[in-house]
Each structure stands twice: as structure tokens, then as C-alpha cells.
Amino acid sequence: MSVPISQMWTVAAYVLGKKLRGVKRYPLVLMLEPLFRCNLACAGCGKIQQPTNVLRDELSPGACFQAVDECEAPIVSIPGGEPLMHSRIAEIVAGLVARKKYIYLCTNALKLEESLDKFTPSKYLAFSVHMDGPREEHDHAVCRDGVYDVAARAITAAKHHGFRVTTNTTLYAGVDPARIRGFFDEMMALGVEGMMVSPGYSYSKAPDQDHFLARQQTIDLFRQILLPGKRRWRFNQTPLFLKYLQGDFHLECTPWGNPTYNLFGWQRPCYLIDEGYCKSFRELMETTAWQEYGRASGNEKCQDCMVHCGYEPSAVAATFGSWRGFLQTVQWQLGFQGTPSNRANLTNPTCDGASENNTSNTSNKRRVRLPVLK
Ligand code: SF4
Ligand code: SF4
Image (cartoon, rainbow, N blue to C red):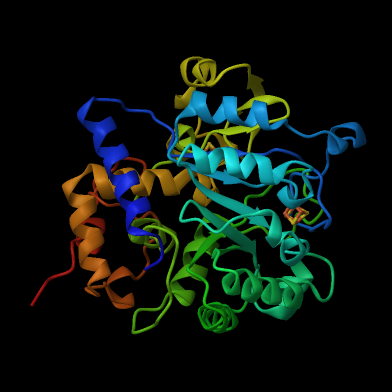
């Protein structure tokens, strides 16, 4: 089981409740960034380039609680920077657990083992450990040798202390699909509850600009990694999102699904692009020109983006908010998967037979037919 039943039920009830009330835009996961400071300097990071005074600053627990209460999302992800460097992170987590929020505390794990005593195991708290592939690839991605081994030890220790532990993996151009498959096996052997995987977003501030994946590269890579067949991997993600990454299910970005709150306020429009800040969550929802974002908008910054924070909420909404999405999820969960041969030359995959630029195309219709159950 990649997430507790109670969490799944909470999310399903939340999405269905919004659907029944006719609410079109709602948050699912609050990205709460309580600081930008970090003890690593990864080449693909777009968060740690803030000036020193900002890197020294951090959100107070009160500010975090106010954001969480305003937003009302059932899940709170705490990225950064490195949240375990926040001076009052245990207080923040305890306050969120008391609010019955499902928390993913994202960490590079360098301080995880020494910090475990500050926290109490709970179904509401999962440590989401940053692991960008097997040892060599991960240490290369985080620009420091030995980090993979520290993180693997910390995962074991956290599991031993009764904590929920997941991993989050960002993939870049040039990775070997076979080695990533082996890495997933390693994470399963370590006993992680579920894995979250995403292509990296091409942050303009990131020092390494050569290894971000374009859209078709992402699809090709994930098709090679997630080959059909028996495997024992548990993903902390919807099957629809994983199918989207392989070009087998069309989703549009729902940036309001993962709103971001940090030292500057509510970031417009998403965790990845910074186009100004709002003072309140309501202002963010009501004054953002959402139609200017997402691939269909034509916005250049969105054309290659297939990142989880834009598309996982879309996948969750499709899973619990539509019969087609739900049935497709059930079919994939039961193992009725498409084969690589019926998706050849698929460059603009869709779910409904219309190509992404809305032109009619019969070959696309054939490709996206639901798997035939025999
Ligand atoms: S661990 Fe995360 S926050 Fe820290 S430098 Fe790396 S990507 Fe950035
Ligand atoms: S497509 Fe990506 S970059 Fe564009 S709004 Fe969505 S999440 Fe942000």
C-alpha cells in the first residue's frame, strides 16, 4: 500500500465534495516552503539562489498555520530549502498533525537521522527523502559524494523508528533507464512506502541548464523506465500521472492544485514559475490569470513542463472526479496495460481522441482506446 487508506479516503472525499459543489479550482497539496536555506547546492536546484538575507530568514509556525488554515488543502508538502534546517520545524509539523493534515516533509536526509527524536511517528507524517537515482547518479545530481549512502541509512533509521518514509526523485536528461529501474528495486528493498518521480523543471536560475528534459524526451524516458510487466514498485502517485508521463493519458496542468506559500507570500502561478506574490490565498485564486498557464495556453514556460506539482493534482481530479479516469485507473491497477506497440509514434498523446491542438486524428483515437478486457 503506497499511502494509508485514511489518506486515500480523505483525498477522495475532498475531491468528490468539491465536484458535487461544482467547485472547479481547488487546492489539493499546499507546498509550504518555510525557508530557502539548504545544506546542499544541487546543480538543478531553482530555490537556493536567493540573497543571503532571504536564505537566513524563515517562516514562523504561526505564519505556516495561517497559510494552512487559509488554503484548506488536505495534504501539505514541506519542501525548501532543507526543512530540517528550520529552527522550529518540529513545532510546525506538530501543529499540522494536530490539524489532521497529511504531511510530506521533503528532505535531503543529511540531518534526518539526528532529527528523528524531534518528531513522533504518525499516519499524518511521512518523510519524503530526496533520491535522484542510484548512488552515482544521486551524488552527481546533488554535487556531493556520499549523500546517497547517508540518505539510505537515514531511510532505514526512520523506518526503524516507525516513521512513514517515501522518496522523491527528479530525473534529468542522460539517465540510464535500466539503472533507474534498478534504483526503484533498491528503494523497495529499503522498505520505502512509495516513490514519487518527476522530470525536472527547467528553472532558469539553475546552474546546470544542459540536462533538463524536453517533453518528448520525458515521454521516451518514462516509457523505457516503466516498461509493462510484473514489478513490485510502489509509487506514491496516481497511475494516471505515470501514464501521462509515458504519453498514454492526456492531462492539462492545474497549477492551483499545488499552491505555494513561502517567505514572500502566495507564489503566482505555481511552485515552478515565480510571477509575483499575493497576500492571501483568496487573492491568489481570484486574481491569477490561470488561463495564461499550462501547455494549452501556449505559454512558453509551460511547453516542456510535465512536473508532478502541475499535473498530479490534475491526475487526482481525473481519478476521483470522472468515471473514465476512475475506470482507467482500476484497469491499470489490475494490470490491464497497453503495450508499447500500440503507442508507436505517439507524439501528442490524448485521452479523448482529440490531439492537444484540437485537430481530429483517427490514429490518435485508436491509440488511446481503453485496454480490451478478455
Ligand atoms: S537538496 Fe533540494 S533544496 Fe537543497 S539544493 Fe538540492 S534541490 Fe535545492
Ligand atoms: S505547466 Fe508547469 S510551469 Fe506551467 S503553470 Fe503548470 S506547473 Fe507551472
